[in-house]
Image 1 (tube, helix red, strand yellow):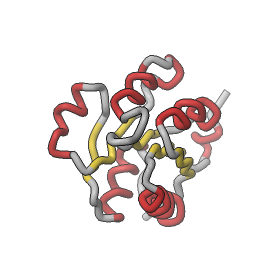
Image 2 (cartoon, one colour; image 1 turned 180 degrees about the vertical axis):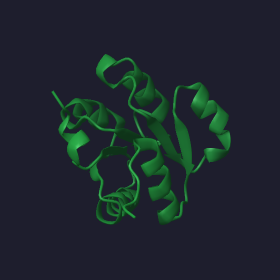
Image 3 (cartoon, rainbow, N blue to C red; image 1 turned 90 degrees about the horizontal axis):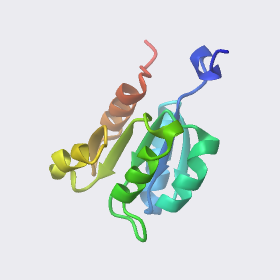
Image 4 (cartoon, helix red, strand yellow; image 1 turned 30 degrees about the vertical axis):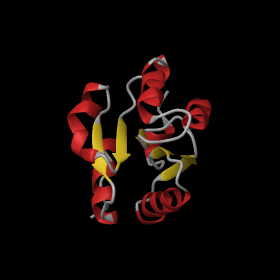
Length: 133
């Protein structure tokens, strides 16, 4: 059976972030400008609850969140067999510690603040989605 996304359906990005301004901005950039389907979750616990129903192609993850930080969320995601291979990219103001993030199992790091065009390029690269010519 062929995955519907292989036949032109929009790629899905799960964005786990507690700051509402960034939630709106990233969803707008990726959804409106980039054509991605974006699900925003305001906490790590919410993201873990909703990841299976959403089935993302990429997970963008903040590091510094209350209650459950990004590293804890990443460990929990990697322990879920059905999501263990989904690329997870930290979106953080502490990007200078990129080696630490990769050592924890993340696929990459995008620094905050970011340029919208650059964010879109990086997300497209991680999902295999490229801009239409």
